[in-house]
Amino acid sequence: MATFIRNKFRKIDYSLLISILLLAGFGVIMVYSASYPISYVHYGDANYFFSRQIQWLLIGLFFFSIAAILPYRLYGKLSPAFIFMSILLLIIILMPGIGVERNNSQRWIQLGGFVFQPTEPIKLFMIIYFAYFYSQKQAYINQFKKGVLPPLLILGVMFLLILKQPDLGSAALILFVCGIIVVCSGVRKIHLFILGSVGLIGVIYFAFTSAYRFERITSFLNPFENHLGSGYQLVNSYIAIGTGGIWGAGLGNSVQKLGYLPEAHTDFIMAIILEEIGVFGLIIVLGSYLFIMLRGIRIAKDCKDMFPKLLAIGITFQIMIQAIFNLGAVSGMLPITGITLPLVSYGGSSLLFTLISAGILVNISTLTKGAG
Image (cartoon, rainbow, N blue to C red; front, side, top):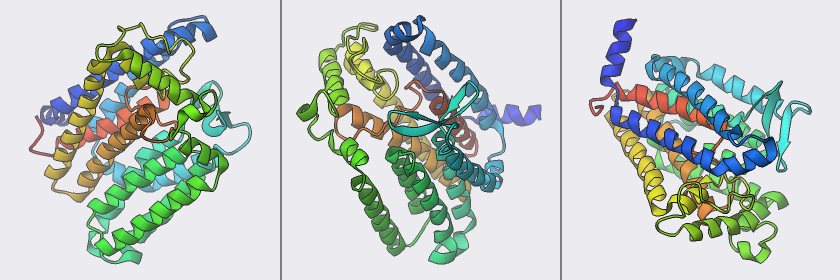
């Protein structure tokens, strides 16, 4: 066992490992800077959110290490259990007394003093399931009913259950990432066209048939029209970004985090980063994500087996698409969906399962010649 672990660590892509750890460390610093005023006002402790983020980071690093050394095939074998657990969690979250409602959404489960967001592990579980299924069905990949359809039925159930919370952002994120896995699995182009059309029509239909979702989606188009209502958060994000300019106001010197910008330490932490350290903060964040994406694609490309290849693609693009959703919302280029910035935003569930996903990606890097 000791020899196995030593061999694993010799082959790890350390450039990927370091970039993940540096981004998570940077996130902890910015969580403290963005949260200490609201922490003190609401809890009488300026370190309230910071100390919890540190705890989750340590827990996440522990499971990151485990994910980095476990045999990757084990995840595939457990994929049916992961799907069962996902559906169970999404049903439980809708039960009164268990599901926790915040900001008109019931996205959290509370058991005692422990609160977590089920969609975070479900993102990873769906990636594992899709990667494993399509890697096992390569002989039937041109047969829609036998080689393509079954996981899509599961995806449809997941999408509808997550939409019930309601959480269109997470549902769309899972849909897009699973779609990328399907594309990379070798499915016929005609099948891809049909599936893409159905998926796009479905997202548009559900987005515009609910007044709540419609307002969330369209408010970003002209936030100044209702700057004290639906556009309030985005307008204050603009103020934070504009105030920071090129050089920033200095670490810790944000004004918007003093109660003006809602979710300053979670969904909108990038606005605080830009306000405090300007373009330098943007370079750190975008540079880190770009590097992780390039390494993830290289790792997937160098994999000889289909399962780790699809798994690496899914994890890489799950991190990237989530980052795009978040950064797009903060900048006003995309609707506000409540999606956190991976490895940077405050949030135990998000940080934990992003680190576990990253650990699996690092694990897969030991299979390729491109590691180093």
